[in-house]
Amino acid sequence: MRTELPSEHIAAYRENGFTIIEEFLTPEELDEWREAVDETVTKRGHYRPPTERAGEDAGYYTRVFIQSLNMWQESDRIKRLVLDPRIGKMCCDLEGIDGIRVWHDQALIKEPWGNQTSIHLDNPYWSFSSRHAISIWVALDDVTVENGCLHFLPGTHKTATWDNVGIGQNMGEIFTVYPEWAEVESVPGPMRAGSCSFHNGLLAHGAGANMTNGYRRAMTCAYMPDGSTFNGQRNILKDEQIARLEVGDVLRDPAQNPLVYPAASN
Image: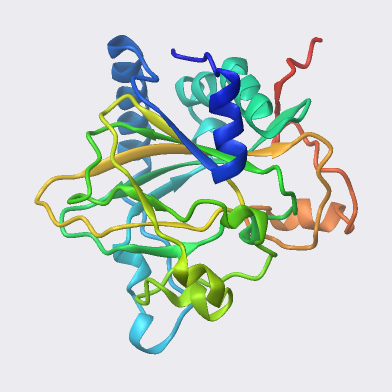
């Protein structure tokens, strides 16, 4: 695993809100990530999240990607991958923080001819609010402009608030909330399999449609700065978890948000 982060790399991440690391995984590690994800997704079945939108967007989101969340909670193989303290340290180094916890992992698989992922922010969906939320996105297949690579709007994490839009048919709906961002030139992120990107939870980003007859598999994990507090949003939390929480409570349940770095024993 390529974990070195030169200072200029970190500076560029903080300026732009994202970075791409080529050949992040060794060929052997890539095989393990692929096998672990395929095994768990196959066991769970191909889940398409329901849409809450009506009208022209009804059902659109179900064809954006096959999605599988919190796989680490039932797969020891996935758990070893996303709770790797080396990844946690990279997240901390990029964001300039001391500790990081899992928020949720998810496999995101664009099917052949799958819909585009419209431009959005991540952190406003989640049950905590932080300018230091961060995600890793690992390419399990070669990711190209043709099959739906990520596109980033550099620097938007600096001016983002927690206003957001859903993922619908209008790629640029986010510009109704942040009209000034329409002038930002997007940066595509094609990657070879085994490479990865990190991006800030308030960075505007999306992905193109899969215009090929093959699958585009990615494994992602969103990480939460240690010490983050509940903001009142449900997101992935269950009824019994919501019942125990009040706004402002620290989110540190090891069964839901295990500490990744520093290691709990430190």
